[in-house]
Image: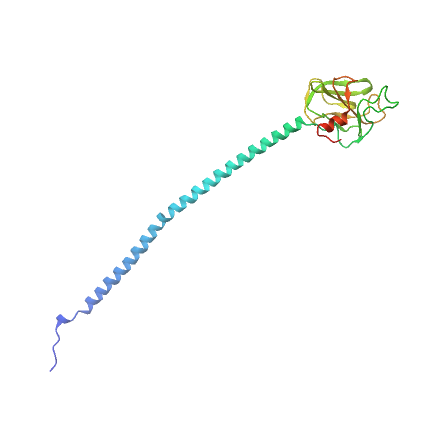
Length: 221
């Protein structure tokens, strides 16, 4: 005798499939929602990091600009200090020279002993101010030919003789190393050279030993 099956103990296949579809659809929806939430959350998570990077870049640029300004200021200060040091210093009155007749040297070329130091250079060589000062003589000086005298302070002058060219005028202020003329052989001269004197007045007869003076002021001719 066969048993008669009842409907209450069976679940229709269509219902089962429906439940599976609902569950599957729910899982897919949940996964999709999770992915969307993750994607939506990503920009908000990276936003603070991006802002921090921008702030750091701005700070770095500001620091670099400040350093550049400080370096420029320091370079300008050094340039000014160097210029001041040069102005306060001494130099030889020309370059590329050979020392010629010395101070107080006797000889037939001078009525008395030699009153300065000769720097033997070709005619046309640059002659420069040995120290900062004011031009008090610029013109013909008799035996000195074309000559320049510069006042550097109370009882301190330098003189430059036998020039082929004078490039300054009386009253002009000059600085250490500035070109004031060209060497030559004008006046009482036996050949191209620069006659250089250090004096206590602007006039002949007040000279002091120039090489000793220059060495005492940091110059080694």
